[in-house]
Image 1 (cartoon, rainbow, N blue to C red):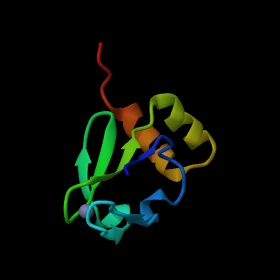
Image 2 (image 1 turned 90 degrees about the horizontal axis):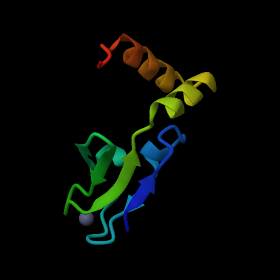
Image 3 (image 1 turned 180 degrees about the vertical axis):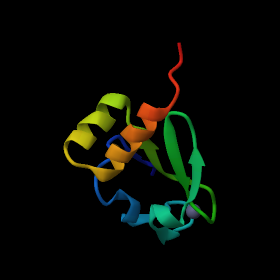
Image 4 (image 1 turned 90 degrees about the vertical axis):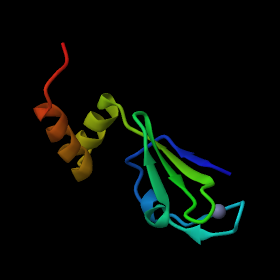
Length: 88
Ligand SMILES: [Zn+2]
């Protein structure tokens, strides 16, 4: 089955071990194929392309909350967002 992760800043998900229900491949997100979409990242099985993990991208309040809680990755993303040109 496909795991959906709604909290991007939850620690450890990148190294969590998954088993592909289709071909029994085992590994973490680091070994999977990554497909980037606007709203989410999809990690698929490197052998059969079964979608194993869907990570929903954080929205701005989530990034701000994580940065305020001391998450270094979130703080870096906030800095990037702050330097991006705003759409009018
Ligand atoms: Zn597979």
